[in-house]
Length: 468
Image 1 (cartoon, rainbow, N blue to C red):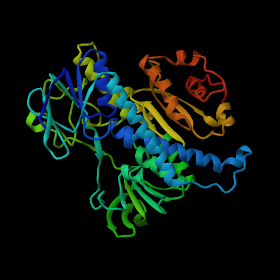
Image 2: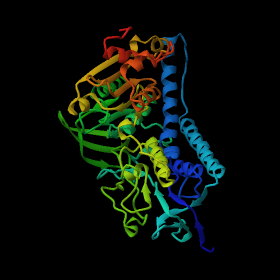
Image 3: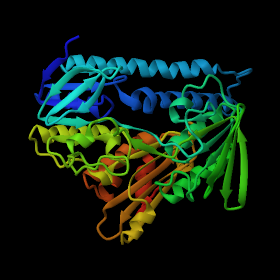
Image 4: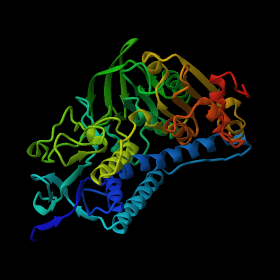
């Protein structure tokens, strides 16, 4: 087959939440766009991350509710689950959304090329098929690299062993392992700990730092640790993997903990210690694009060191979050189109963890605010004092807000509770608008709602809380 030649205004390499969003926004701005994707549209987030994992976690939430039925006066006998169907449902959700992205590509007249994209000289991208042959050459003055990232391995715990899992393998197990050791208590590790514990695995969660969710506020993380422990998960903090022996039937993990050496035998091991950017075989060296520590450094508008080449999403480094990739894609495209954009405010990116109770935050933690020299006011409101939380049986957790005592700036907010990941958007809008405590407190919140807890927490910071 003859090699195809294609000319456009923009070529996007990678069709994940950064790449496909960038392509759509570019089309909206009148640019002709070509997008290269070697796997499935939607990337890891839609196919193997954000969306299918949330489908799995929702199943766990439902199962927990059923187990609590007597609390609500509901009696459910002989409750059982079909794990294969649980996993199957998550795959169906992902497949449906992937088809939706394909529809959006057609709707916005974005030409999609299946294959692996590589930089091939100034303003050129070659598309390689599964055998490595060049099937097309795409030319454009602007190129966006949006190739995402993949899980990091630990020495001695390679993902090619059947008992060692990355997040991808953990999503599609055929049955629930009797025991599971999870290395890394970030969002991915904590979410899978909650999921598999709910369905009956004996879960051990190992973290080398002093708290679960190391990026979150210490007080909130400690509340989550207590909750996970109460749910039956063994949490080992300040513990490091010293070695591993893998057999045909199990994994033997040797740890160094604050209490001394400890050995764990488990059916499966999930390694969730972070990700590394997909920067290999992209032609970056040929194009002169600089890389550092497995990622592509960029400026505030996602420009690399080479004019006309941008990098968005996980491939340009932490925070590796789908909503960051989408926001960066829009910022990069608007820059290319000549619009006046300041990029994204990296101090206002929400972080979300979807275990139960959920954890969500935006802005500075209490420790970071103090270390930055702020004199702070801190307000808290427990969900046990919320009428709506009590009504729906979700009284665990709280809202915590942090203000600068002198300027009244809202420095950060942290929520642990059943709907934390939905509630955090209110605080993000407030920070974007540089809202004061007075404006938040005087915004009438519907009653009864969980979001009233945000208003009450703000009131607590200024001695105006009503219900505590």
